[in-house]
Length: 400
Image (tube, rainbow, N blue to C red; front, side):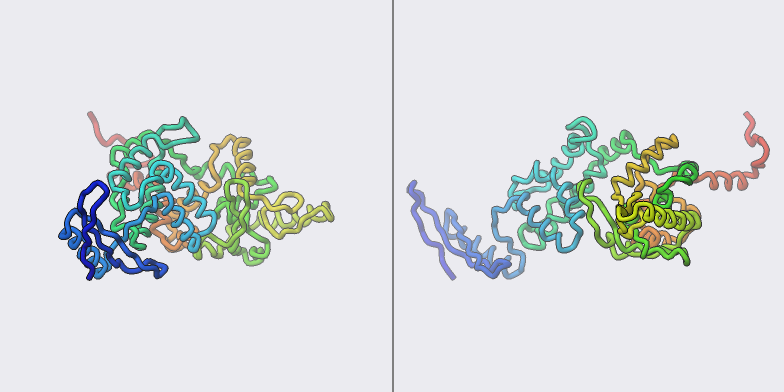
């Protein structure tokens, strides 16, 4: 085993130095570390520490990689597992991290730095849709933290850092309460609003695709629906393809988001009949357009057969909402209203999750089923029965 060598610096100071074999990196290259200390004893102690950690499998070789550089490497690694649209979402979520902490060396990043970053992000992280430098939604910040935790967790696995400095960082209770109190969250349509919209679009050309949105399909699934996946005799449709938007301008055609997303659904009577009528209309439009018609095979198309993208379908729906005097909600939010209606109707959790294209029923209910006071009216009626109150009469049970 090598012993420390005595060296004299240009300043005349005496120090001790030795070379330690610290194993090999992921590419098989030898890792040699130079240890320099004031005394030979300190040199040996550091050498023994490195060799002990190497033997125990806990040794972390020093490196100069910054957090920003590691995040770029992590995103490249994630391309193996997720869609390109998801990579773009991850990259956008980590923009704040790269701007504020990207210059910090990965091995020097501390839990306090991550916590300070998170607190500042909640307070001043908003950059558009309002005044820059104002509060950022806690839900957005938690999404950023989730991605950062995952990236740093991977760095631990790769033995770039010993522990994950974001593991126990979280948004403060005070910030959560402030966000809940101040942030207005869009509510899905009520049953009455859904029914008003359905009546209002009964004669609209795109009634059928819009009704598909109102049976819980994602907008990208509606735009990706093809006639070959629709069985109008049996009243069934298969969801196997999506047409989603990247950056709100590029259309990406791909398979479903998850394996559970590829599913078959029975058609309710309304969408079933609307699809029959829409197919007949498209055959007439094809005949009238002649060679100018693009026979793409998609369900959601314009008068010349060209498929609509999610942005076009969304903007079309917004115009109808304004004309009908309804609250403007995203078509994706209609999915919330549908799944909530199914849950309140007593549809079993396993069916609810399968209908939504999820594998986890608990996630479906947690994410999509929010209960409002009016949804609990049945419970209030049940208490009237329990209290012995005649619901048909104006009965006062307490006299003052």
